[in-house]
Image (cartoon, rainbow, N blue to C red; front, side, top):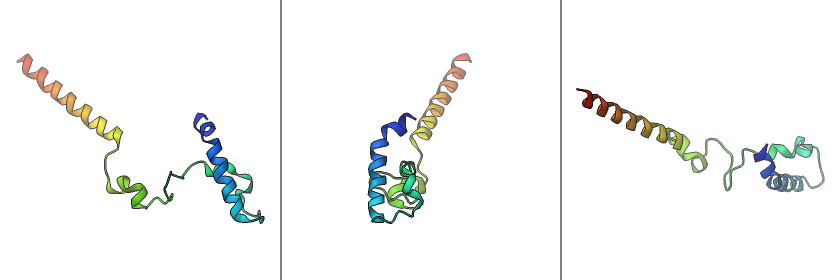
Length: 89
């Protein structure tokens, strides 16, 4: 809930801008749902999942920060394992 609270002002601004586009004809489902504008909108992004500009790293299959850290930890663990094996013999 902390994230929702911190993004509340931006969410309401986006919601109000969307309602202005209706120009008085409030027949859209978004009329009473300001929370639907909280997620899926990147800063300067279009929100499409297949957009190479917004999601190029995901579509290209590049490793995330978490995956890179895990790979580094694995390599360090293997180095330690081989060092301990050499010291024992």
